Length: 395
Image (cartoon, rainbow, N blue to C red; front, side, top):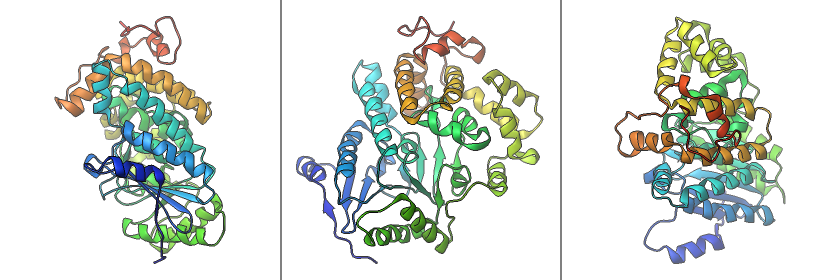
C-alpha cells in the first residue's frame, strides 16, 4: 500500500466544529500525492443528495480548480450499497407543497455542481459502486471516468414519479448508441454490473474487491509527476482493471450490444429491436410499434410505459430529441426551464407521494393518458407557448 498523508480541508474542518451532533454528509481529503477524495456520506439514505451536500461540494470543487496541489479528484459513496441513489425528492416535494424555496435552490445549485464537474480541468474519477441513479448519475457521468463494479445498479427512473431525466441527461442519453438513451429515459430501465459499461455509461469495470487497487493505481500515477493528465489516469485505470479481472475502456462492440440485449430481455431480435423502435419519430409511434410487436420484451416495455406519467413521457421524448443538438451547458439551461415547470405540474408531487412517501403505488396522473397530453402543454415545459406561467394540465 502507498503511504497516504491525509489533509482535511478547511471547509470540512469548519463543518466538523459546527456539526458535532450528527455525521458529516460529505467528507473530503487530499493525499500526499495530490489526489483529492470526496466521499458522499449518508449511507443510511443511500447517499441521496440534498441541498446541504450540494452546498458543501460546490466550494470544494471550486477549490480543486484553483489549488495547484490537487492533481485529480476521486468521488465515491460511503458504504457498500450505493454511490448515490439520487436527489432527496421527498424534501423537494415537501418544499413545493409548503410553498418553500428549497426545491428551486436545490435544482439550480445541483445543476451548477454537475456542470462544474463536467468542466473540471483536472481528471475526475467517480467510483460508481452500488446504486447510481438520478442525481448520482449527474455527479458521475459528466466527469472523465466512471468505474462500475458488480454492485452497480444504474437507472434514470424519473418518469415514474412525474418528473424527467435531468442532471444533464439531456446531453448524455441522446449520445448513447442505438437510441438506448431514449429507451432508458422513458422506461427507467435498470442496468446492473458490467452492462453499465456495455451501455457506455461507465468507462471502466472492475470487481468491487479490486477498488483499493484502482485507487493505488491513481495514487501511483499521481506520484510520478507534478501534474496529472486525463490520459495518464485513463492508462492507470485501464491497467488496474485489466490486472484485476475487470474491463478497460474501449469502443463498443457487437458483444456489448449482445450483452445489453440479453440483460434487457430483448429476445431473438436483440439490440436491433430497441434501436428500431426507440428511434421512431414520436412517442405515439414508439407505443404503436411496441403494441404491434409479438415479443415478450415489447409487451413488458409497453406495460412499463403505461405506468409512467403521460406528461413525463411526452416531455421526456421531446427533451431527448432536443438534447442531441445541445452543448452540455445549454442542456442544463433547458433542464432548468423544464424543472421549474414540472414543480408546478401536479404529476411530480403526485408521483413522489404515491411511490416514495405514502407508497400507495397507484399515482393518479393528470392527464391520465398520452392522448390528452397536447403539444402545446409539452411546449410549455421548454418555455414556449402562451401558457408557460400557468397551470394547464393539457385538457
